Length: 292
Image (cartoon, rainbow, N blue to C red):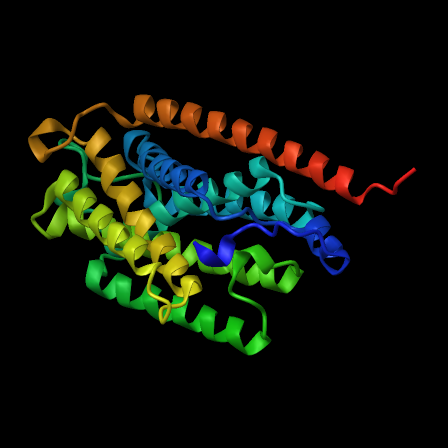
């Protein structure tokens, strides 16, 4: 997107920002990794809560703690590290999956494996339903953006270099991933589109956003955040399509195998991104090195 285009002319006033950059540039590779991470978040979240039958309540607590640990590592990092950044994205996707399930679902047979009457210890789910759950999450996301606006921090992630800005960014990411899970599950379970149909619908909406990038009146920052939310239901529907039984319209590949393959893909992409970041850092250091 235009707001994420790289700077090509070195400027002494930007040297501090280059050093402090904690978040990635928005490129095609970014969106591929985002979809891979959110799809893995769906399959891994279901693996713990449903396949291993830990339940939505216990899994949500455990994965939220994982999110906090990965977030601390990211916040303490001095500069952008693809492994740290994408680990937090993955942890928010996994936590968002079970948080959404806990809010929206209950212990009814519609959400349980045949022959199972309970999942894990504690409450089985609040049973709010997708519309109510989505309304709560949308309200919370709007509140975060309102607070963000009041702080005067930028919404363009390339320019986020402060602790407060990054903390607000990650709060918005967690809520948006939870909201995206609710949207994806609604498309898959309740809309009648099924897993493949839901994924195609979201992919179509993302294509519209790409076209809108050429409309000068529409801020690219707004398009970015809409796209960021929409990639989560794409991952949710794609993950369900991979793992759910064929009788429900899925490929029945299972959560363990699907999660393992997606994790391997994501780690490979993270390694590639890390290699590219090291090359770019070396190039920056060469430009900033004093002449002999």
